[in-house]
Length: 361
Ligand SMILES: *Cc1c(COP(=O)(O)O)cnc(C)c1O
Image (tube, rainbow, N blue to C red; front, side, top):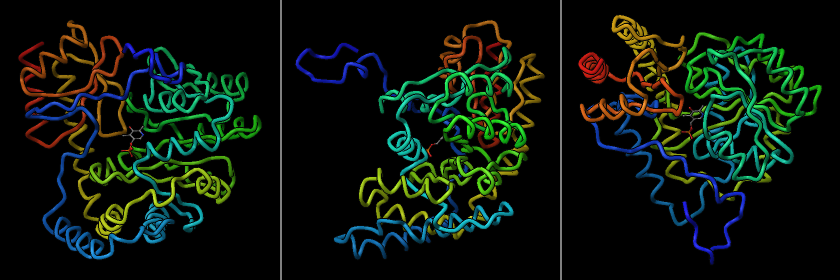
């Protein structure tokens, strides 16, 4: 991007590119790890009614502390784990991306570390918030290596260490005991360990929320965008020690979570059994998709999420991505040469993807 000379843009921002997963019309949209299942009619009606009720007082600011949403999120996490979190352990914002940004605003000071390849927004938000980003090391097959990770933390002493589990774009879940080993060394070096669990509901690994009581510097990020099938509403949340939540209050913008967002989120949390009802189906579709990819002679990385990173095709990633799009199937080129990532869709979408792929290989 060439910026005009008169624009007083921060010089450290000039070389950056905005986040830009293509939003293109396609028969099968399998590129941003969305849940393919739309809200049921009953859920749509309940949301509409709640939004209608909230709209009668839209002249007023919303609940600044989103008490009802955070209370419901605490009970969801407690149901899923053997924890006893209260509202004082939960923060909610407009997507987990806003949570990540708030963590940088509060704690970004010196440097942040993450294990590449992982979620591209961690380094981007780091740079935008003027925190030095350090790319930590993984194994050559992209699997997480706890010894490398411990070494990177001890060497760099970052304020924030990010680990994504299951990892995006590779799909690998990291065992809780390895996260605990990392938590120990992060604690010794005076930082926070940020565990991004955007895809936790698709994994059978225990959640890092179980570490928070013993390790107050462990913070866990979750989202309603993926398993909850609620990406359009923008609700992400943080589970952490109350001291971390108090720091979020310092950096948040007043009334950041709109009354309409809060109304919709409360309904979706009430309907959580239903909203999460398709998770098992997506896990089984993931296993079918892996088998189909293998049958086509492709290789996949083990995935505990709702997407699969695959390789073993002859064309370049960019070529195959374009050819699939021409056949109406939009997947994701994550910038790893000779790999592509596909989101698990509904039956028709998965079938369209496999059919298009088998014609191209
Ligand atoms: C999709 C994703 C998010 C989600 O972001 P929202 O802002 O909550 O939609 C966060 N972290 C990772 C690793 C993701 O893949």
